[in-house]
Image (cartoon, rainbow, N blue to C red):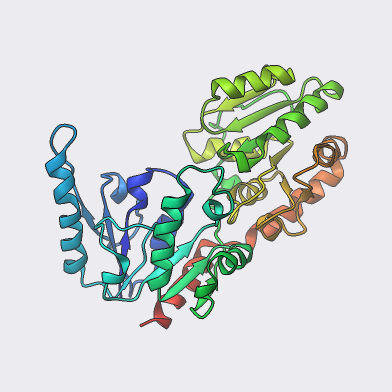
Length: 366
């Protein structure tokens, strides 16, 4: 079986959760499946740990604005799609590198739906209408649909009820992070107690609630810190932290390798994840796999990931969040029991299981 993975995600970003999803999927494919990947990123081949991937890489050329290169690019990917002789297409994102309409592809298409963020928060995200348009077009012609959580499936049916008659499989993600990544060479992160937040800080991520909680918590525990893994603070964010009086308590950490991230999780008091919406929510799973408590908002897909092995709170209540953060600090023995339950919960999520279930979807369509 030959599966074509249109690598449009590599045009949007070099790293990210979707990238990791497809890299893990391709890595775990059985020997009778030949993965074929199209890409504009020269680093793609290094990321795909597979015995025999076939990669069609378009090397952009010329000086900006590269008009000739840009015009030739879709022609190259149209040729690659024809030359691949693929049995099935599984796009990495909702648009095609060939810029062709999805209805023009003459083979089964499997689409993975990661979330419905742009539909739910379209008033807050300026690019929502563009994403909704291309997603709708892809869903209309998809032969099979994969949702990464049951909550995502229900949201999909709410916003796109026309796909209800298509085969829809719920296949959860997994994490590659674990305590095994931490070595003696991993640098010491902090001598002070800290909570950790990992991810973007868009409006629906609800990060201000966490900042408010830290501001109140430091009145009782002045040594407590917050470490955030993500992009540097904006000037508006720095102003907000100054207003709350916690600018010296919040640190943005640039993580360059998985071992450092695993260590950050492991030595934290807990991950705090106040997001109002996630299609899956990898950070709580990563936290449990790395031996810390996952404190997550009781909304969307997050209860599916955390199960009974974490601490959930109302994302509209700072007081509710504070209760959970104080509990972690004041109940070390009970915290350890939650960590042990988190280890067990994390074992349920497996890249190999995800791949096996995905391959079952492929086979059902051929």
